[in-house]
Image 1: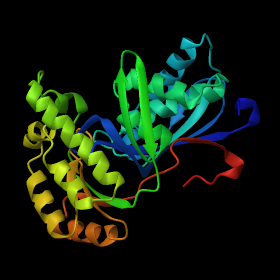
Image 2: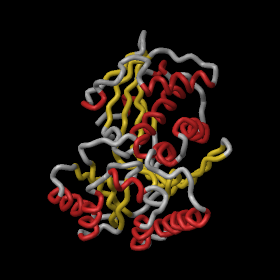
Image 3: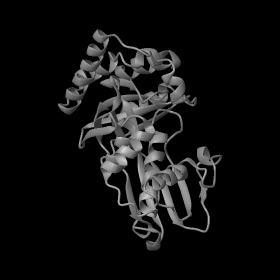
Image 4: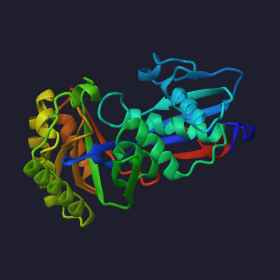
Length: 307
């Protein structure tokens, strides 16, 4: 599909990463979306009706356009300017992968306009090189739950779909930049702590895939990699965790770098949990999330209705 085929739509899901001990390696795609409507133009023009996006650059300096132009340049291509309508359900700087979804959208944009012929594996490597780790970008690209590793210039992930849990995101009004949240993490880890922390992550994966929800929740809580350091930046974490578990959540974890908190429950229980949390924490947004198993997609606009 190219610009000569007319307007097209790029749709990229949000993501949550880490899920406790799965630091920089476990991510899940969720049903909040970044959507781009793209059509040919004489100049780069980006616009949005989303309140959070209105103050972002409206020309080729827009982050998504920059990713697209940089991607095309890697393959020796120049992109024809486009008019891009950008809408997003993903809150910025809240730990739900807004930057990762934008990176995937930019790569998809370059692939379509520049006719680059990128494979999913190509897109994964490109996005991981930009993001630095594969958990968010891998989930947004492939959908489902992904486990990935990035080392020595190579990235490998395994996606899993059709998992039977739901999540309630507890989203505060305040934002938290990833660079600030990473700033509180230790620069070194002892060998014994590394073994314990990675073992916890291994058991988390096994528990999620075998639907041992109680064990999965336990592994989320005993993470050593990042949550013990980041909780100090999120003073309401303990209250949300205690309440959510009393209302049936099997596990609670920071979403990405925070400050959003994810409360995990078995499929079918999310709506009641969402309502309970909303009543208990009226100053924050409680939102039921389901796993997106599709990942990013590109669709002709005449076959697609933009929500």
